Each structure stands twice: as C-alpha cells, then as structure tokens.
Length: 273
Image 1: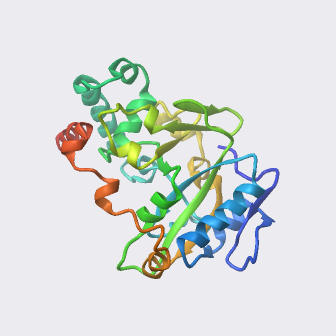
Image 2: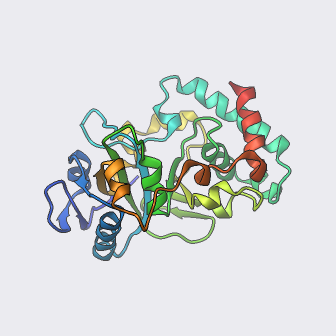
Image 3: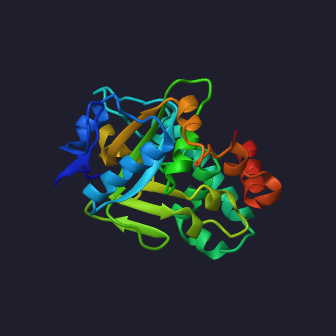
C-alpha cells in the first residue's frame, strides 16, 4: 500500500492553528488535533478537503489511538491483528462457505462470484476477522462510533483515497481497494445504508493467509492513508453540538427484525465460534 502524502499532504497537528504541509508519519506520531464540538470538527475537515482536493475523505471513529512499535497510529484489519491468525483465517473460510450456502437475498449470484463482497458482509456484521477495515462516508457517524460517555477521549481519523466509483474501486498505484457497502449488501439490509459504510482492502486482495508473508507488517496498515487525527472529549463535544446530536446506537445498529441479514450472520457467527 502506498503511503499517503508522497506528493503533498496538508493536515492539522496538535499545535496547528490552520492546515499546514506535513507528512503522514508526523500526523500518526502526533497526539491529535483537539476539537471542542462537531461543528468545529466539520469546519476543520472542510478546510482539509479544500487543501487536499485530489483525495476523497472517509472516516473512522475509535475510542482509543492504537500505536505500532514505531509509535505511529495503526489501523490494521481485525484478521491481521489476531495473534492466532491461522485459526482466524480458518474461521473466515468457514464463515464464507456458510454465507454462500445460506444467502437467499437479492444479489446471490454476485455474492457467489466475488470474495470481496462476502468478506465485506462478514466484516460489517462482525462475524469474524477479515483483511478489511470498516470506515464510513459520514463524519457524524464516525464521531458517534468513537463516543464512549465514560471516557474523556475519542478519536476520529480522516483517511484519503484517490477516488470512488461503483461498488468496488481498485487503485493499482495506491495498492488500495474501496468497497461501498450500499452497493454490496442487499436492500433488505438496512445497517450498512444507515451507517454509510465503506470497507478498505489491500489491492491485490490477500486471497490467502500465505500472501501475508510477502508483506511487512507496516505495509498492511491503513494508518498509511491517514490525512488527519482529531481528538475530542465525548461529553462536552456533543453538549456543544445541539444541532448535530450524537447518533444513538439503536439508529446505527437497527434490530434484527428490520435487518434480516443480521439474523443470518449472527447464526453463522454462533456456529463458527
């Protein structure tokens, strides 16, 4: 995967007053740029989008800032974080097989043909670890995902991709694939639509765990696509954002009755565990 900002990257570091030219590594090592409200976050993201006009922004919210050995912010897919990766990959294969056998919704033929689409459903519905990373096109959804009212810190990462077109966009030069969940999941499944979900993958895809051996750990880290890292206090942040309230969990995760794909994936999850 290509490191973002090889040409020119504008971002906001912890002490920045406005967007400045910097590097992906500096952004990842930094503590993060503090914002006090959702409106301030949106304004600063707008400034970064104007400055980095060749990139399309996607967002990820987390409750903590995970670091690698170099003390850089790290965004690694769940499968590649699992120390028992062989067992995790076997689970993924089992889940994939069961999904193909039991999938009765719209687009069954597409699901059977494309592994990336099967992995996308398994990842988004948290069935098992995959080589994919969940992100969203909605800044507000990302900030809501990051929120833990018992914590004084939350993080929103701004990730940049070259462009998005169609259900799956492959970027050969960047070594990146972008999957739009609303074009992958059937219309019966509301969750990916409500979350405005996308997934990021290595390109070419890791078709087997053996392929991982051909990459260094830092190459399989979507931290390489971070444009900016924002930090906020969840309690005061939303209190000052009355016009843009927190998206509550029930809205992000609709119950099974309104999302039949959830029922299927949860049955598969229980069988492979």
